[in-house]
Image 1 (cartoon, each protein chain N blue to C red):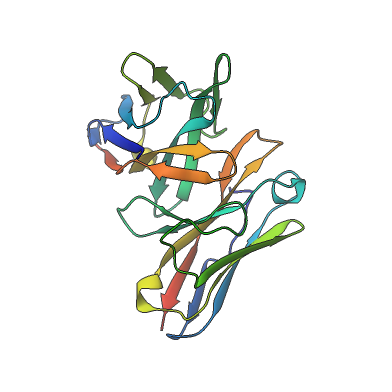
Image 2 (tube, rainbow over the protein chains, first blue to last red):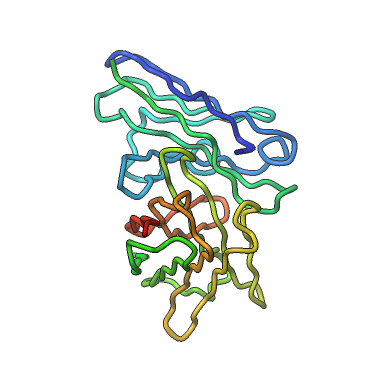
Length: 111
Length: 121
């Protein structure tokens, strides 16, 4: 049972914008710990999309952006493309557990 | 460029021990800035962080509550690698296992290639 909750699925047509929420609590996101986002394709190592709440590693398109407010964070994908169809996970640190936690994961479907 | 190379068997019998190793190149397992993690992915549970080892003047370990008591993560400074041992496995431990480096402020920034582990007799 993850302490970071995400919607199971979101979908959008090519070119549209979708957002994925990541809801935590006062012991993780709300405590000021960074949120990171990963894209997962089956059988391949997760790809880091966003680090430190809103920073993109080199090579990640600027269609991906992150934000954080209070006890929640969000990942936005603008100009949705077929290749964006994947599972997405947020990740942070929980001070009550004293270790890293992943979100429940969101499947993005491109209609 | 930091790279992680995983090795270990892909099939483990129920009640036995799952053992994997993650070799590090381009960084040191004794680094004072990174932590060395094991993570698994399964369709039923998604990405699940299992545990970490790291060095900050001495060695530390943290383990996820659901596997604590069954899991050991050990550094091997002579080979610059770290290992995962998960005891008393059941079919529920069937998953793809990844090792990863976490750098504070940057998340899990380097990943191993993944090892598909099936628990079956």
